[in-house]
Image (cartoon, rainbow, N blue to C red; front, side, top):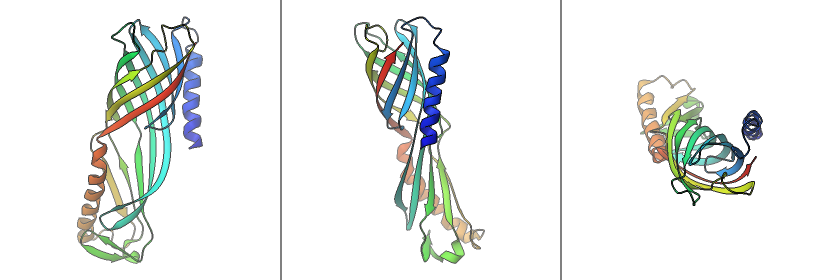
Length: 222
């Protein structure tokens, strides 16, 4: 988690330093709390009604879950970087439409909790047969984003402003990798049962094809 926050802060510092040569009121830096994790962005005023934002978010969270008959320790890793365009259709208002792309590094690691036996598919196996049962869930690496927002960093006298974003990124169906390390791992029947377990995990994560993005932030204009 500390590495994630450090990388996001370093990214924001790099962009803000590199863009210092722009004219006054054309560069702003924001920090935010988001459903993608805490993050930071740099906004650039491209035209009177169009801003461009670049930034990143990250967060890690551990919890427990169950698919079919196996209990898992689950670690959620959120890591994403975005390139967004904000269009302000109304000159006198701060409402905007946002579109762009998100480099999606989000993933979920799953690790079966220690047990005397595991029921995988329709068959029960001993812990000695299965060994460890672990895997990873990943999503589409580049996800399009569409949303609505409020907050205009440029065009007012104050250096400080607030922002709010509500939208979704499309990260498609998840890719599931799940493997056992025990002596039965290569058995065809076990592999068929393991495929059922993968389907259960996929069903639980398919709801996140469209990942909701909600963010609130504080922006400083140079």
